[in-house]
Length: 387
Image (cartoon, rainbow, N blue to C red; front, side):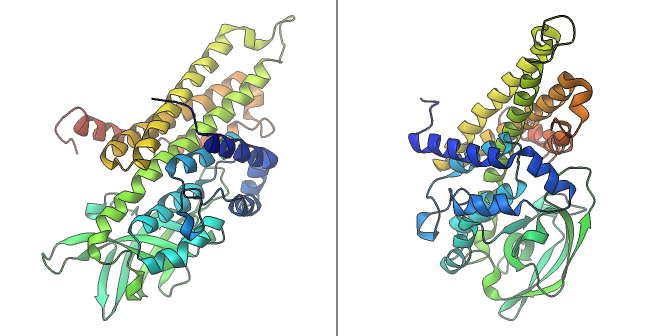
């Protein structure tokens, strides 16, 4: 057992950290407040190969795994630039297409996902069903050689930046008559697809949308995979990377907040010649938050390692635990940093209160802490299903 990164992973971490710090949290906040996107950072990260580290080399990627992509997510967040679309496009969409897409779909989309010139976002959540794919109301119906999609989706990130939306729908199994999940690549300019921006109390350069699909007509090759049987495994192929990379982003955000607070408390003097960080009432909460972030990082590393080894069931448990631990640790770290800085912690200048909305959302999405506890109780502790 080793906790050391490979030399290549160490180099990746250092390089991404340098890129993130060159842009910094000020850039992130400026873009978010102006209603703009972090296009320059995304483009440069793509050109340097960081967006495609988990994509096979034959499609223009780095040939690594979710471990490498988690490093990218964490280090950009640790520099104050947590990019949500890293989770949505390279982690979810690229993984699903790499594992379960047709060869034509891989050739058409993966090179662009790898270099950042293309973005594919993910649409599963619905107003009534949430993310419970057993009860999704979005339905795909056969239409000759193609498909018609109808339904609604909510909290869909980055639709205004993307070329396609990877839509999770339900379609009838001809053999059994039962509805089963299927994934479709829907162009964001498709006729019948409309969107409405959601106003969120989160400072982020990525926007959230309601999507309306009104008999969106798609060709047969919009279905991900060779047949409807690919739907369920393709869906699950994207959920574990989602949890792991969200967790990595949260851990990076926690590291950023603790670093900012530590720099401040190590130099700030109010009473006499002692720094405020020399008082245990200030230093102990920060130390506690640092421990929680580090524990979350260890769980993220375990989950990513299991996933890259193809141990999907174990990765599912570890990924959920990592997401839970990171969500709690990031929220604690940012809140503790704000408290340590006092009034300065609430200013834009010091750059920690700007993350309060995002880390609070991290305890809700993409799966709530309560649903993770349900999962652990049922699948780890052997308890009866409670929902």
